[in-house]
Amino acid sequence: MSELLLSILLGIGFAYLALQNTTAVTIQIAQWQWANIPLYGVALGALLIGLFVAWIFSLLGKASSAWTVHGKENELNHTKQAAIKMQRRIEELEEENTRLREEKGEIAKREHDLHNGENVNLFDRLRHSFSS
Image 1 (cartoon, rainbow, N blue to C red):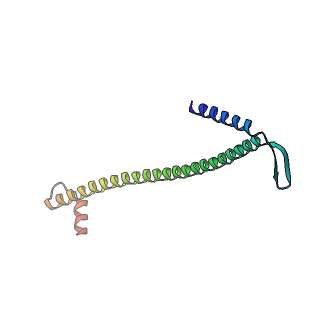
Image 2: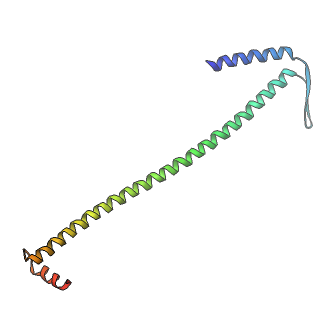
Image 3: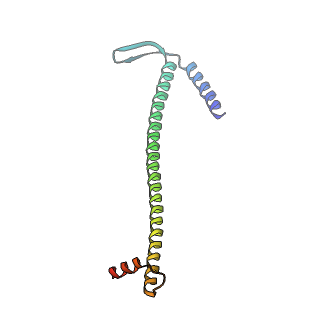
């Protein structure tokens, strides 16, 4: 709603400017020359060219922002993938740690049984005697 009101006010202002500045002028750019152009036409042309240039700069700014966001999203995805890999590695190491603790517990139990002479088969006794 405020854009519409602003547009109406600018339109009224430009209409007033056009009524007050009807003098014909000549515009020359390099070798080209345009004669008998109303002064308000020159003002309107300058306004439109300025808006176009501002729009181009705005597009460049948006493109730059989009490129930056894209790079940050890629960096975030790589970081997430690395975190997932590290989490998998942690789980693997925890499983291996559990397995090794269980093996250590079995070995300690066998050594305890060997020293106490409980429930030990011949193979375990020979292995224990050769390893000592």
